Length: 228
Image 1 (spheres, rainbow, N blue to C red):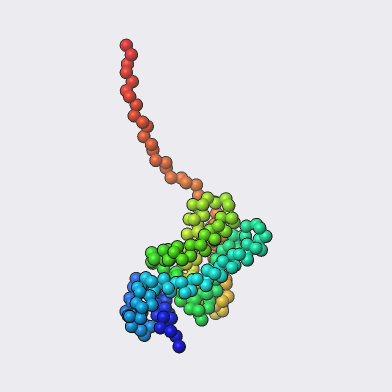
Image 2 (cartoon, rainbow, N blue to C red):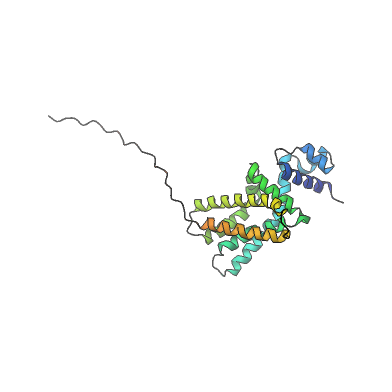
């Protein structure tokens, strides 16, 4: 029998993914879960804490797998920086494995994450609060793989990469419904295309700063007196 807490998490995850966080009320969640409001407050205290619990339930095991893959690829590199493709694989493989595993709710969760990236300002705070060390490890690995990139440029491209991946994860489940290809193969193909695209972006030349510099006024000088 599914425990009350898990029923609430399952209902919240599905409704947040379908309707968005802001448009989903606690009333609709308790109706879908078949519980009362007191049960939600007992287990999660607030709607925001409930969203956080929904994310952590899926993301914490995925992050552990990410770190294990990154350590394996670093060991295989034999002291050299792992290739950019391997760093991105280590980050994305756990997500795509989850995405094609309905028994773990992966298809719903990746749709939710894609939606949160686009619609909610809560996700960055949750990620920084709970996954800072993981992000730091991958930031260091990217820096070793791309030592020529300035830190600010690497951060900018990392943000673009995460946004692109979130959009792909949000859209691919719908696209997969129109193909006869097995779900796991569809996700594998999608991930390889995504990694190829992201690598091209990370390796592209740095765009020079062509902004017109601010004109600094010359200091005022005392008027020149005529000599007699």
